[in-house]
Length: 141
Image 1 (cartoon, helix red, strand yellow):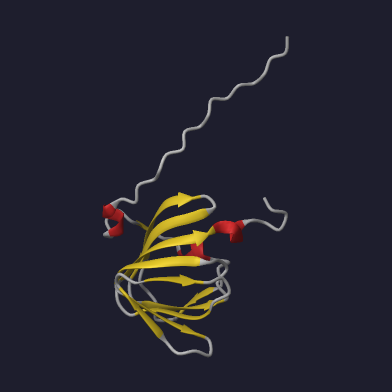
Image 2: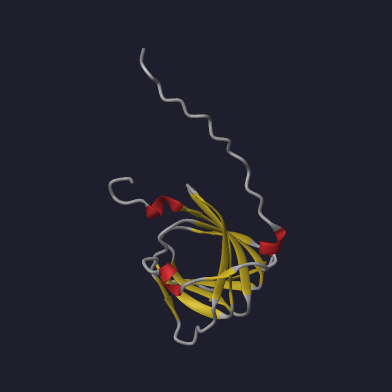
């Protein structure tokens, strides 16, 4: 008689997007090295700390991210990113293009490959959804 391995089915449950995090409460400080490899360069005068909370990391990353005023240059976004602005303003200036301003309540998509400035003129908080395919190695693992 062969012994077959049995594993109970795993229950998958929805993940709540807690209001306190959307309001900026309970976020944890971000280590700036977390952005290494993402083609992001901070302007010299960007000195504010960043905070976040990750709700989920799988085929997508869902998080709240908050930062003080600052401007970064993105030299080819490494992933597609959905952004919903919870607080503040965001001004995107693509290379060779005009600035486009987004405000609290606005939603937008920053496609993979975007090159240009990302400017937060005041305290800024966003809900983001990122396609995590970029994190896979060349062999698909």
